[in-house]
Image 1 (cartoon, helix red, strand yellow):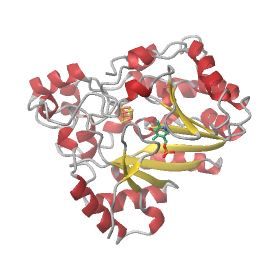
Image 2 (cartoon, rainbow, N blue to C red; image 1 turned 180 degrees about the horizontal axis):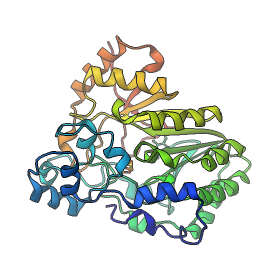
Image 3 (tube, protein in one colour; image 1 turned 90 degrees about the vertical axis):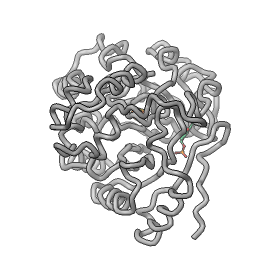
Length: 348
Ligand SMILES: *Cc1c(COP(=O)(O)O)cnc(C)c1O
Ligand code: SF4
């Protein structure tokens, strides 16, 4: 469960903030945590308030203003709203939906690091996120135990340094961009000293909810490091990609950073042909290539987002007939114990 507020991340305090960083941090600390406020702001009736608040006890509501600004007023089924608004459905227990569907607790042998796939490791640089997505497979992840501070950086880097098969660092979390630019720079500089590392990948949703997070300093850090860099965004619906975000992304592209997107197939959010086509086209227009379309991880409290495998396959086949090959993400699911994402069979 992610309960901490963003600013309590250790070591943020010991750093002088630049104005740019101040600005995204301010947006972050002003993020809405109240169901009531969110609904009032969107002119949506305050139904099921008790149940929604109960669901918040399990996983709090957290949504920054720029993301709210992209929602349609008066629309209780807005695809962005559905991703963050607690529902009474979350309180039901449904067979097959469990706390740790990926069994991450078990592979999490080294604090702050998950090494399951060949050649690359997930580094959990931050335990927090700027938004709480209701379908998140990490909603029950024991982040508190895995909270990492700078002292753990050395052991992570030692692990990577001792395994020459690791060519790629994947910064993940939580959301790695919860760290300040200074912290990221420091970590990346240390990683640069490991000779067998070639690539740096950052998995983040933060710019989608706070575009100001893509600071010039951040772009410089990636541009000037010796790694080949990729950012994997997490955008589920084309409505999330507005002009502000697009213009920041174009700066990243100008700095030769590869931009990819992963989405989760979510009922009511992006499970129509139209929504998927629009998403791929909008991404490409912003210089982002669709990478993965994930089937929902069966995490407890998220069953109402589930799209059956059969429906997913049908949708995917239709998509394949509509779009250029490079605009079609790979349909995958994640299974614990596997050495890669599992492709979902989609023969035409
Ligand atoms: C998803 C994932 C990766 C990245 O996989 P790619 O197929 O390279 O995108 C790496 N490690 C773990 C543990 C993962 O879950
Ligand atoms: S930003 Fe990513 S990790 Fe964080 S809650 Fe949303 S889906 Fe989960």
